[in-house]
Image (cartoon, rainbow over all chains, first blue to last red; front, side, top):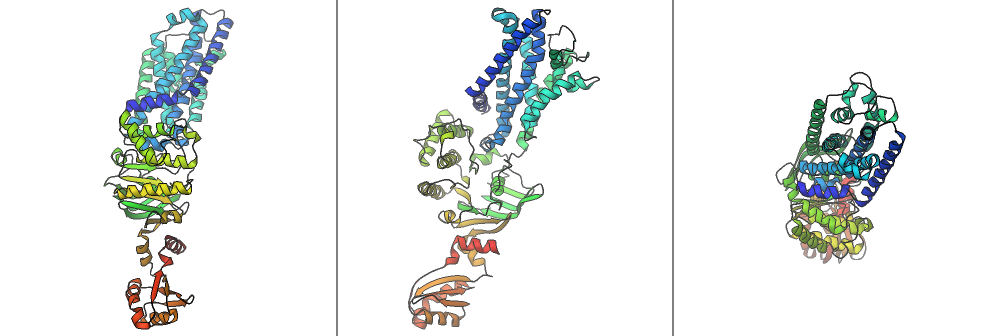
Amino acid sequence: MTGYIFITSLREFLRPTRVAAWLAMVVGVFLIGLAWRFLATDLSSDQSFAHLFLGIVLRVTALASAVVSALVVSQEVESKTITYWILRPVPRWQVMLGRLFAAGVASLAIVLMANLACLVAVFGPVDAIKQFMVADLSLLALAVGSYTGLFVLCSLFFSKALIVSLVFAFGWETFVPNMAGDAFYLSILSYLRGATSRTLASNDAGFLEILTGALTPRSVEPGVSWLVLALLTAVTWAACLYFFSRREFMPKEEGD
Amino acid sequence: MISLTGVSRWYGQVIGLNDVTCEIQPGVTALLGQNGAGKTTLMRLVTGQLRPTTGEVNVLGVDPFANPEVYRRMGYCPDSDSFPEHLSGREFVVRMARLAGFDASGARAEAEKRLVQVGMAERADRKLKGYSKGMRQRIKLAQAMVHDPDIILLDEPLNGLDPVGRRHFMDVLRALAAEGKTIIVSSHVLFEVEQMTRSIVLLHHGRLLASGDVSQIRALIDRHPHRVRIEATRPMDLAAWLVSTGVVSGAQVLGEDRLEVQTRNTDQFYSALPSAESECGSSIIGFDSPDNSMEAVYQYLVAR
C-alpha cells in the first residue's frame, strides 16, 4: 500500500503545472550560473561551481523541500481533503511514509535539475556530466531528507507550515550559520557545508558567501556533519510517522 | 454497533459535544440539529477523526480513532465540498478503492459499480473541478460506498441535490439500509430526514436531547399534551364523551366533522377510540397526530 501511496503522491507533487513552475526556476538558476561564470573571472571553474553549489543549489534544496513538504499534509488539511487519506483502512504511518518518500523524490528531482543547470552553466554541456559527483548526489539526498523531515514535522504542528518553513529556509538558514559563537551548530546548512567536499575560494563577505553561511570561520567536521544529517533525517521522519498517527486533523473553519 | 458513553468534546474553551450517551443500530438514523448543535463533532468522533475529551466512543466494539480495522467497515461522506480537483470523478473513486485495499482491476470494477449506483457512470470521466454540487455529492457517496462498508456516515448529504437527485439519493440509502447496513445521515432539514427514517438522534447546543424512534420519543414527552385530529360524525358528542372518560385533557371542535383533542395518555386514548360509536354514536372516519411528525418533536424538544 505504501508503494501505491508513493506513486499516487509523486504524480500529484509533480503535476505538469508544478513541474513547469520548477522548470522556470531551474532556468533562472541556469541564468544566475551563467552570470556568475562571467562575473567571477578570477575563480576557477571548480571554485565557481562550489560557490553556486553552496549558495544556490543548497538554497534551492531548502526551497523545494519547503514547498513540496507543504503538499504532504498542510495543503491536504487546508483544502480539507486530508479526510480521504486518513479514513481509509491503511495505517496512518504507511500513508505518511509513502507521502514522505514521494516528497523526498520530488524535491530531489528538482534539486538535481538545479544542480545540473549550475554544472552546465559553469562547465558547459559536455563537461557538466563529468563534473557531477556522486558525493554531491548523496549530500543532496541527505539535505532533502533533513529538510523534508523537518518541514513535514513542522506541518503537523503549525497551520501555516509553508510560511514557517520558508522563514526557516531563508531566514534562519541565512543568519544562524553566519553568527558568532556556537550558534551555527543549530543550522542544517552548517552541516551541509561541513559535509561537502566543495570548498569556497575565500571567506569574503560577498552575497554568495552570506548565502553559503561562510562568514564564520568555523565549520563542522565532515564525519560529524554526515552523521548529524543522517540522524536528523531518521529522527524527523520517525517523528513524522509517529505524530501523524497520533494527531487529530480537522478543518478549523467548519462549524457543525 | 455504534455507542457513545458520556462523550464530551471541547475545542479549547468551547464545548462541541456535552456528555452524550447513545447507541446507534443498523438501519438509517438521522442526526438532527441546528448549525452548531454538534452533529459534525459527533460524526468526527464516530469516524475517529477526533478523540473525545471525556467518555468513550465505540464502533464495532473498538475505539475508532485512526483505526484501520474500523475504516475497513466504515465509509464517510464529509460535509466539506473538497476534492483533489485535478482528478476525474472516476479516478477519484478508483483511488479511494485502491486505498481500501483493492488491486487495480478490482478497484476499477468496484468504482464502476458504485458510479452506476449513484447515477454518475456516464459523467465520471470529467474533472471534478467541473462538477456541479449535486454531482459532487454523488461522487462523495460513491467513494463512501466503494469498499462495501457496513457503516456509512453521511454529513449533510442532500445539500445541493435537485429534487430528482434527492429522491434517487434516498432510494440508494433505503436500499443500503435494506441490506442491513448502518447509515447515519446528519441534516438540519427535517423534511428531508422525515422521508428517510423515523429513527433520530437529536442534538442541540452540544447536548443530546433525544434518541430513538420519533413516535416513541413523542410518547415520552409527557409534559406536553399529545394532539390528535379526528375526522368523525357528530364531533360534539365525541368530544363530550372523550372528556367524560378522562382520557383527553381538552377537546376543540374544528368543523362539522372534525375535532382536535389533547391527551397525556396515548395508550388509553387509542384503546378507548374504537368504542366511541357504541358509547356516543359517533363514527370515526380517520385520525392523525400532527405531534408525531419529526417537526413537532423537534420544535418541542428544542423550545423546551
